[in-house]
Amino acid sequence: MNIAESTSQFINGLQNIERAIIERLRESGVQANANNFQWHRGKGVVPPPMAIELEIRVQNKTTNAVLSREQVEDSWERINRPDVMVMVKALVADIVRT
Image (cartoon, rainbow, N blue to C red; front, top):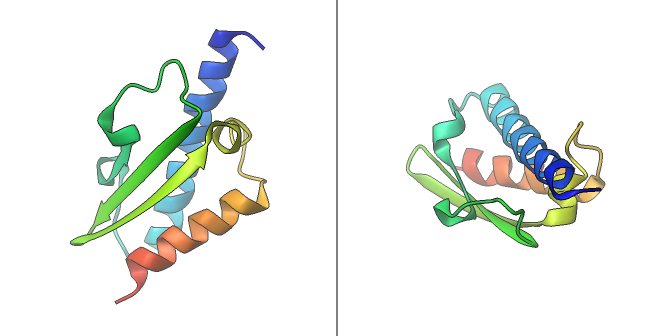
């Protein structure tokens, strides 16, 4: 895989993970959108880093996670890694919890 393919897969993976979190939040009655997410502390993601931090801020709540480059790239078509699905569910639960 060349750097362009790797970068494209990485960006698609970030978007899929973000969409999955937004969808689950909305299903739980929490309004969220891409503006609630900060990836990699606002630093550039090209070339893809070996690990990336995600911060979600919704309704005065903040939660964080760190994902490996492999976890993100493996999510480029859809999220099918059990560890990523567990992380998505945990982040949503953390935001929804009162």
